[in-house]
Length: 116
Image (cartoon, rainbow, N blue to C red; front, side, top):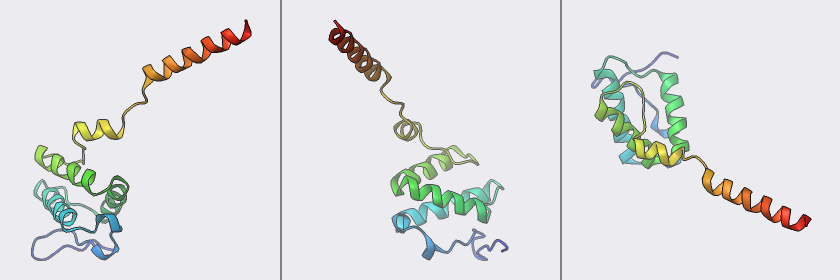
C-alpha cells in the first residue's frame, strides 16, 4: 500500500478511526499532526510502517507520556522520538538495589540465626 499524504498540508494520512481507544483524543491527534509536520519540515517524512509502530508504542505508553515525548522531540528539533529525561527515568527506573541488598542481607542474617 502506497503512503497517502494530505494534499493541503502534505502530512501522512492516518486513519484515526483505528487508533487505540486510549489515544483517541483531540489533544493526542493535535500532537500527532505536529509530529508529522515536524518530520516533513526536517525532510524526514513519516512512513506508514513507522507510523504504525509508533502508534502501537504510544498506546502502550498512554496519552500523556506520548504527548510529552512528541513535544520534547519537536522542541529539540530531533528526527527520532525521545522522551524527556524525567519521563524516561520514571519509565525505566531501576529496581531499588540498595533496598534489595539490605533485604537480602537481613534474610541471610535470619537464616544464620536459625541455624545456630
